Length: 130
Image 1 (cartoon, rainbow, N blue to C red):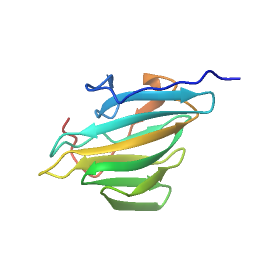
Image 2: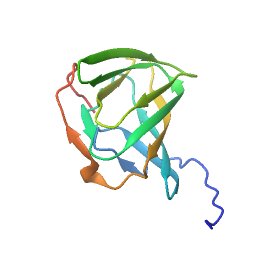
Image 3: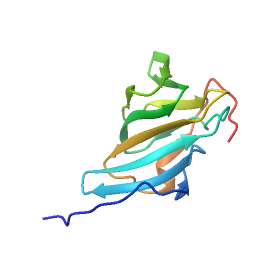
Image 4: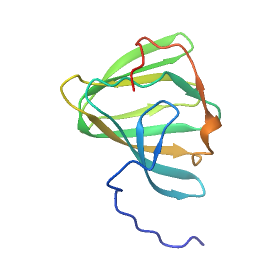
């Protein structure tokens, strides 16, 4: 049986994600982990794909866009508070914050994030700037 855990959102980023976003690590259990991700106004992440994990995001603040591509399916979706998106295993993705405001979201990773070698660079639609 797992121990109970409680954490407050850290004031400062804990780590920098391989995609360049600022990460505030939250909690993890045996089958998943959670973190808060953010980009400053106008920042664009590096385009990546994951080796072993898939994710669910829930946007908490700001506005931006997410590009995702899996096989022949490709789309760009608006990210704004209240929107939830999935990033299935093998999906290529890149995201960016609106030029006028930062972007923040909670990400759930299944299984838990294994480490910095998880993300592999891919080509994306936008020039990264983080």
